[in-house]
Amino acid sequence: MSKGLKLTDILVTFVIAIVFGIVYQLWTPFYEFLGGLGLHIDQLSYGMWFIAATVAYLIIRKPGVALLAELAAASGSLILGSPYGVELLIYGFLQGLFAELVFFAVRYKRYDILVVSLAGAASAAASLLFDWYKGYIGDLEAWNLALMIGFRTISAIVICGVFAYFLVKALEATGVTNLVRPASKEDYDALDK
Amino acid sequence: MQFDFIHKETWLHKINPSFKLIVILVLFIMVLFIHNINIMMNYMVVILFMFLLFSGQPAKRVILILIPVLFMFITTAIPMIFFGKGDTTWFGWGLIHITEESFFRGIHVGLRALIFTGLGIIFALTTRPVFLFYSLMQQLKIPSKYAYSFLAGLRLIPIMIEEFQTIRYAMKVRGVQHKRGMKGFYEVLRKYSIPMLSQSIRRAHRVAVAMEAKRFSQVKNRTYYYKITFSWNDIMFVLYFLILLSAAYFISVQYPYFAITDVRYK
Image: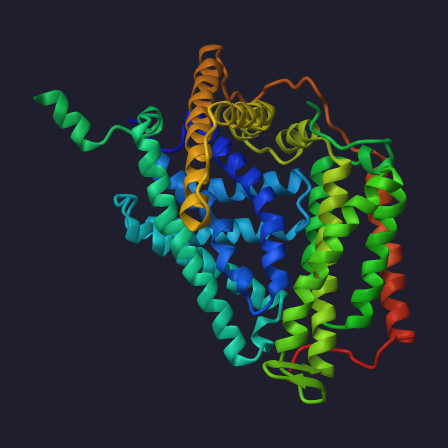
């Protein structure tokens, strides 16, 4: 078993990322519509922007995949002409990196709902960090800022954690994940029987 | 399907794509350090000017692009205008508290988002993805397995769209009724996303196997079908920003529109 990502892993990661790149394009008008409602209601849909990382990780289960997927999804959106423009690259990189750090912390050994929820929350933290510089969110009234952080974190946990987990669970039923996952210890044990 | 939105080629299309990307990233980082709304407004004009004159798009499409962008400007600016910190109250109603400081900070944040959009759209409209990835491999030495994988992925988009249509028609012809509310929304999402994702992953896997079977390898001295080089257009691109942004800075210092030099709350 060789370490690192093979061509198959990279291609599958990119394709997942591009699927979500398209989803992001469809999500943009929805998010902007919610933004028009005010009081940070839009933040409740913010978690969708981090989902590429957790889904790719859950499917492929290899180091580096989360960062690569999130960055590729952001680049894909940029190439498709997203109205958010160049900032996507920085958001994508930071969000992917923070999610990747969570997976690194568990040594890429755990694939449960808690870990992906944590990764989602970490991505939310990354996006807030960048918004601090870009959007001066530190200059919002305190209650308003708390509302924004709360909504964004909740949505990250619900969408990137719970929803992504069940999405991949349903994908596992189709058998497609067996194509791309590395052989686990149970697989080797099964051979010995 | 063509992956570009090119209507008429301009000099922006002939710039080396990697170089264009780097210049745009530098401009992007620059914007993050601007806290003076006067400079931001002039900066915005420089970008808008380039987009309107050199993107090579017909007027109708320019307007079509600008509508969602303007909406985004409003949704970015409003939260800060309504709920930002400030001392000079203009208007207060319930939770909404508009002050002079928060108003200008909101406009500033909105302008910043507009500049990012402008830079991103200029890049997307004037860059062919194929040339971008060839350039990334040749000039920035991105490993070919990443570049070609991404290109292969982009090529799968039309198939994904076709598949989406197929699923839609299949459900329609069988008279599938969707429930309303959150549960119905989840059902719809599941019915589309699972087949789309699983088929895409299978296809990606097959493409990768085929690439390796045909001896796709990462040799150092690989040859490229497209040779991406530099030209005078690259220098023009830098000069455009160097001259006009210096002018923008000079004008905003000499003839400011507003007396505010820093929108951050002290």
